[in-house]
Length: 313
Ligand code: ADP
Ligand code: MG
Image (cartoon, rainbow, N blue to C red; front, side):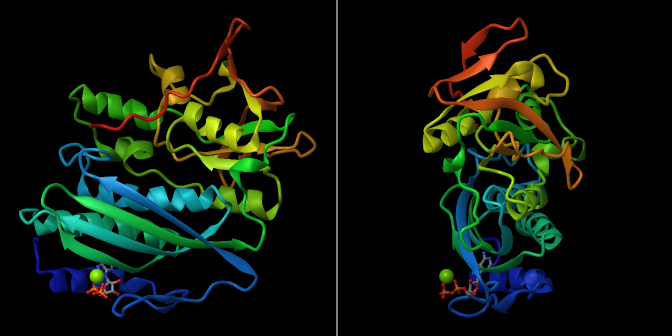
C-alpha cells in the first residue's frame, strides 16, 4: 500500500472530518453509530467500483473515480425517493499505487459527499494483489412505508425520465476510440450528479408509482420495472431526451451510467416539466401486455430488448 494502513486510515479520517453531521459516532471505533430520523426506514445500498471494469486509470482521473464511486450509491438512494446520510468505503489498493492517486480519489468522493451532507462514516482498507477495488455502502432513510419501489407501475401509467440519456456512453465511446477528453467538458460521464432532490420531491408529493435509476441503460432498467411490476411498456423514440451525435438513439436506449431517474406516474397526476431545475420528459406509457416496445419515427413498433451496459473489460 502507498501508506501503511493505519496512516492511510488516519489521513482519510482527517479528510472526512468535515461532516460529523447526523452522526453519533463516525470513523475510529469498531462501528459507526447513527441516529435515523423518527418514523423513517433505513435504506442501504452497496456498489463495487473495479479498475478495468468500471473505470480505467488512463481514462479517469482519480477525483472522477472517487466521485463516480459515491455517485452510484447516492443514485440508488435517489431511486427510492430517499435521503442519503452516511457512506462506508472499503478500499483495496496495490502496493505501488502513488499516494496522490488515493488522495485524489478521496478528495473527489468527499467533495460529492459534502454537496449532499453525507458523512464518510467508516470503511475498510487493504492491499490489493492487482488493481484498485472500491466498494461503497451508502446508508439513507425514507419515511416509513414511502420508498418508491420498482414494483408499483400499473397499466396506463405514464413513463418519465429526468435529464438526458446517452451522454455517459457517448463519452465512453470516444475514450474507447483513443480520444483524450477533458473531464470537465463531459460531466455526465466523469462527474454524474445523482438526482437526489428529484427523488425526494416525487416521494414527498407521492407522484411516482415506480422508480429506478438508469445505471445499466434505459432498455435494461425499464425491463427491471416491468418485470417487478408485471407490466409492459411502449416507449416513443421521438420523445427521448437525446442531444447530438450519430448514435444518439442507440446510446439513449442502451447506454449505461447516466444515473437519471426513470419513473412512472398515474395519468391523473400532472408532472412538472422541471423538478428542482432538472428537466422531466414523458417518453412513453405502461401497458397491460407484458411486451416492451419502441415506436419509431415512422410510427412502426419494434420490440425493445434489453441490451444494457457492457463493462469495459
Ligand atoms: P477494524 O479492525 O475494527 O475493522 P479498522 O482498523 O479497519 O478497524 O478501522 C478503523 C476505523 O477506520 C473504523 O472506524 C473504520 O470504519 C475506519 N476505516 C477503515 N478504512 C476506511 C476507509 N477506507 N474509509 C473510511 N473509513 C475507514
Ligand atoms: Mg477493518
